[in-house]
Image (cartoon, rainbow, N blue to C red; front, side, top):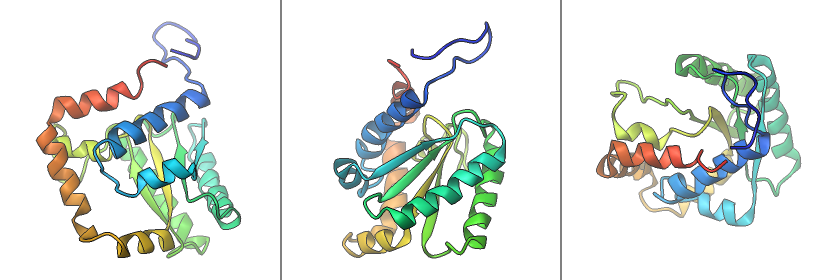
Length: 195
C-alpha cells in the first residue's frame, strides 16, 4: 500500500492519487461492472469525470470544494461530472448525511438548484429503513465518502434515451440482492487492494 503509517494503531495515509485510483477501480468494477449506472461507461471512456480529493476533516473545506466544483462545471463544458472525495472526513454515516444536507442547501443558496444535482456514496451507506446486511446498500457504498455532482441537463438528456429509466434504482437493488452480501462486500474491498 502506498502512503505512510504515522504511528502504530493509526490508519495509513493514502495519497490523493491512490484515493482517485481506488475510486476509478470502484467505478469500473462495481458501478460499470454491475451496470448500476448505465451512463457511467460513456463518461469513463470520454475521460470527462473530474476527481477532487478534500483531505480536511472539517465541513467547511468540503463545502468550499462543492462550490468550486460547481464553478468548474460552469466553466469547463468538457467536464461532465465531478466526484468530491472525502477520505479523511465523514467516516460516521450520520455525520455524512448531515454534510450532504448542508451541501444540498449550499447548492440552493448558490443558485444551482435545477442546474446540478448531488448523488451520495459512502463506505457505510445505508438506505432508509434498510438492514445493514442488505446487499442493496452496496449500490451506494464506495471506498470513501463522496459527493457526485451531476449536470441536471445531462441527466434529462440521458433519461430521454433510456427506456424505463425510473426502473434503474429497483433493478440495481434486485441485482445486488441476487449477487449477495459477501460478493458485494468483496467487490468493494477489492477496490482498495493493491495500493
